[in-house]
Amino acid sequence: MLDVIKQGSSEEQYYLELAKQIAQFFSKSCGAIPLLDAYYYYGKVTATNLKSPNEFVKACSLLTEDKVKENSVYVHVIDGKQVLCTGNECEMRMMSRSCFI
Image (cartoon, rainbow, N blue to C red; front, side, top):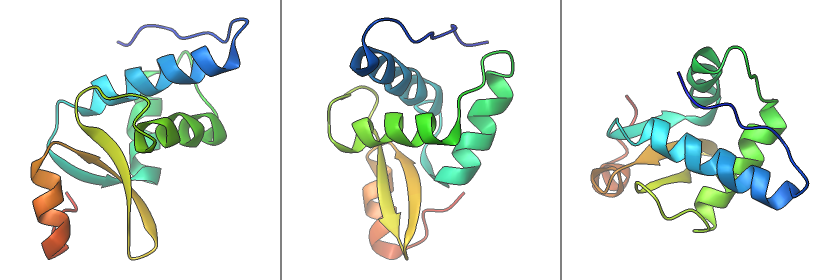
């Protein structure tokens, strides 16, 4: 079970903490997963503290902007679809387009 992240006085801090939690959660796997599927799996673990799709995407955008440099998790676009990538191996797999789990 993940810690509950509640929106406090700073919206920026809330999304930063959410992005860190997402990075920590998905850093345990290696590869890539479509962002929609990532939202589904993250939602299953945080069932008592659900985040909206917009909150999830906004937090993931911080991963892409390198504001959260933890665990090598970032968002990449492949064939027009946003994919949450983990680990350095994903970069090599993206070149061959075989990075989907």
